[in-house]
Image (tube, rainbow, N blue to C red; front, top):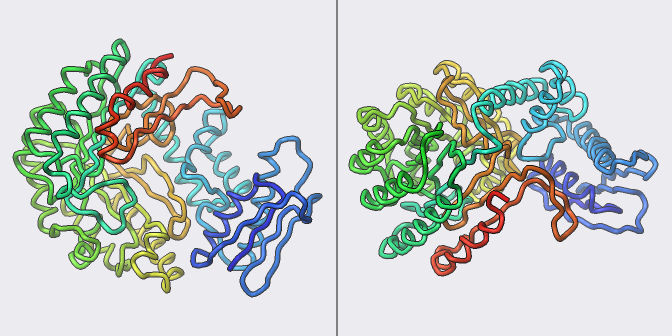
Length: 475
């Protein structure tokens, strides 16, 4: 048991996640007591104690600056005590490239940004350089968009053939909903139509149909949805149209032919691994050969931008398994590759609690070999994000050919353009032209509007989902 106590809630989030990154196995108890002295106290298992007196925290009028200083003192102590440095240093957010982007936009050179990340946040030089490289790529891609007058559209299909054991998305198994899919489609199409009418006159830059697994829809349902999108929206300014086909066991030639008849520019065929033992262990009801067959079928049907997803650190896998997976992926030659690091909470679910430290070193090697494989395939890193409690404090990285980067993926990370979303659990993000003050007193220029996750509730409350967006759209 590790105990963290503080005089102020301001520090607790960062201190918890930094400590958890160093000690992923340990339970952490948190306590805020405004009467305590010192400012922060950290008691590790075994009795080791670290504290920060109030006068060591500094006296800056900027509370965020004080928080950074307190976090850095704690990080330096844990790093010294464990003999470890975290790949992203003391950064706890899910979008480390956002900081690099801000500094580049402020006029810093790439080398200045790298030095800033290393000196201020303890980021490793290699990760700082990766962050800058990706931020620079994102800047160039975002220039193609009309962030002020444009928007993007997300459409969610919350069903999967089966639920993978590592999955944290709000998906439902198809067999529970197969006889009610048309009810979901009725509600979804109503919401899509309402968004289309509200967005008239604005420029639609990207469409992303995700989930879940969109290809759990049958061919007729896919045709209905894609035809509706073409009817309700102008594609004159469309730069990218992605359908995350995903699971090979949901993809058929008939469904791919439907996609090919419409202006879909990018699809995903996501194996997560090319090790059959692992696919079986995590509940993926398809074979390695299925992945290869579906990928080649998509190529035959003319798809020129195919993404594949992998996960580093799945149960029982080591660096040699990832090396073999990458060898097979190279043989297929995808246009983009996204490599995810397994989150620790998922690793625990797989019974890997006793190999966490080994898992960190294995994932480090897996990520390095993934980067090398991507380079051999001519794929460059173009976007990056992190999850809470990610194994080894690593990251998820998207690699792509020069003209095949997923623009929508960058928009999700950088929050530069409004994303209107339809479907159960879908999240609309409205970027306002200037900051507003919310009821709680917080100022923001980004408004999130969440649809309910429960599918039955979504169907029953579809009018409410439509109305909730209406008061914010294009104000």
